[in-house]
Image (cartoon, rainbow, N blue to C red; front, side, top):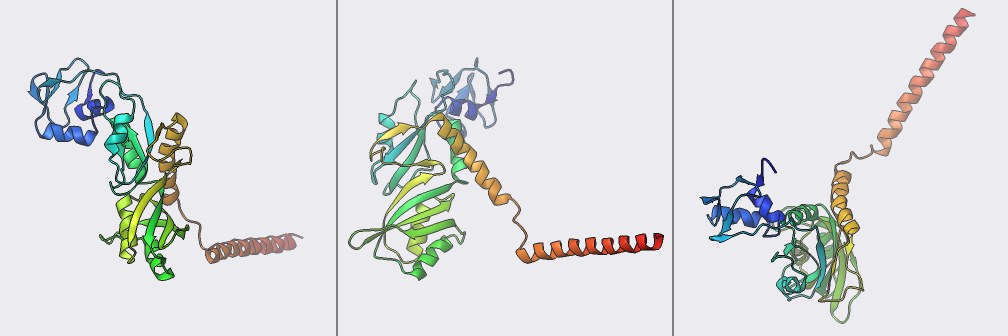
Length: 278
């Protein structure tokens, strides 16, 4: 790489941490390049000597693009899952849009910092599905408030659906789908409706869904095809949102009528002209 790459990108690609984390090291003066304190935007080459807190940073091959899907139990730290995953060359795993500790469900972990950043951006555009357990049944007024998706900040959450999905005793489950939703956002819109929320579980993120084959506490590697679909789905959902909407029926009818009347007038003028020629 003749011109080099930015320091934070180089270390993220090699699994040392996310770009944001590496940037915090640079700001704190913890990184040096060839004996000089690193600065934001600095570019490095393979031949450069990089040190973190005085310790040499070993050169590694770029991390393979691998992602693990975890079925996390509420209250269980993600670190415990990361410790059980295969590590290569001391790389650490980064969580993508993790759920709050007291909630759980589907989690994504990757040792590729650059890929983690891409997936984090993708998560903001993807439709995410949740199972939410509340105390008691929600009436239509409260359900309407949930579907409105109003957050404490005043910003709306793009809720696509919220439907009852069973329950036992005084507990009731609701299946919610929203675009770009985080676990704490989902809990917030339910609590704003007056619901007493006891559990929020993420069940699907874009094309990646929890299935019965992945028990709680278990993890599996995400296939290359599914990873490609995950990144592609974010772009397609965003494009669908930005696509122009079809004109209302009345407008389309008026436009059709206008074109039809124009053809009729042109046809009558043509017939009149042929009549004069004869």
